[in-house]
Length: 229
Image (cartoon, rainbow, N blue to C red; front, side):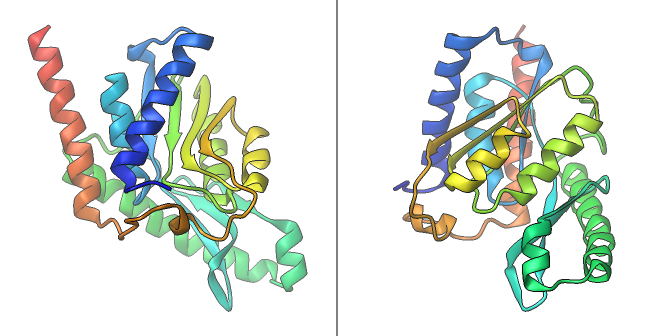
């Protein structure tokens, strides 16, 4: 059980730091931390600060089932990468037309969110991920659809290494993500997984202002560090 996203991020940062020291070289200039908004940003901020690496966002929206919007049957990223759980959509009888319509709508919404947040934080509208080591962070993972879409988007953008890190992840999602990422780091991988919120004492909703604040704080720290050196 985690107190809140900040505490979970601090614990996750320690684990990532330990694994980096044990298993590989860390090059700050080639590493970037990407939070999945909105809940992933407070967690990702703790990791970016601990690693002294830049922080940014990658938006990936879940495609909800028609009568169960919280049930992810797929996901789409800002650059139009679409992932669909074919087994689940067939089981629920969801049509390809529904998936296509939702994908087009969410891709546009996701792109606008990404651009708005980056602009508000004073960041560039796009980022160059070629040959970068990317650490994708979320506050928890149930189905893994948004994380899978993010991974495929990053591969398409030329990322050299993609790592996924989260405080808690379902066992099914953990195994799915291992097929998409070079490494998956989870502090808790419980068998009994109902929802991400059950593993937090405080799981209050994160708003856009908090996302922008996290990005701005990271950016200001990075600028101050460069000024000192």
